[in-house]
Image 1 (cartoon, rainbow, N blue to C red):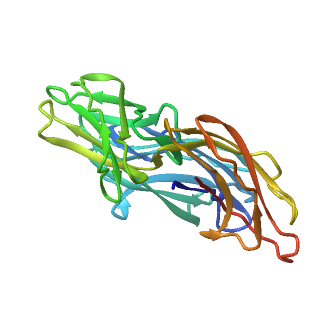
Image 2 (tube, rainbow, N blue to C red):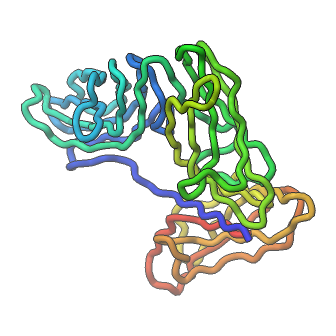
Length: 327
């Protein structure tokens, strides 16, 4: 049986008080992890709003081990008023690491810190190697369902100035180790800059497999020396069935007793069949007083639909923060 838990969390803004907000922080590489060369820029943006009459200045600083990263680079800040968007960069001009970005909001003359917060990241700064912007071709690394014995293709950007060149391998990992029945492709010898490609996958298994991490390793030409390594959190469920494109077709704010309708695509491995159920979840458990539709026996591939609701005699408002897809 395959259990796929889709959790949707809403966290829109960092808000210290009613006067100033920083929202919608978007990184050019959404994994917030990678290997970058010195002087190379890591790009991101955010939206802001302030009611401070004189405006504010917003700084985003690279940090490591609780202090500004050695040789850290960051964007200056003009005086900002009202609302808008701001593009930013961080980086470093010496080798090292960045494990946090520290946001600081000041008054215009920077005599008063209005508020601050950290965002965790994992960047390795090197003299001669870059590997970042890893992206799967056909699935989202945040939450995906995939079939066994299928290559999950990905691309990445690299700059390989290391003497003799280097190789990049990406490995599927589960519970802190390389996935037992996982497979992957290493790269040919890379030099210069370009876009590399790779894949990971899972061999047929009697149990479902959850890939929760992607290990990215850069080696020397002979593959025996690990030059750098980092990990990217992913959330990929691999089994003999995949369920994708789960879409709600009704309002986000239904009344008690009203159905929440969903459509989805499915694909079973050859000779497999099953029933697909959708269930509402609240704080990690089945939502109280719910009712849900049944499921016909299906095989092959296709599109189907299902629903659930919160009974109208419950008397209480209910917040649904996740949907479990179970086959």
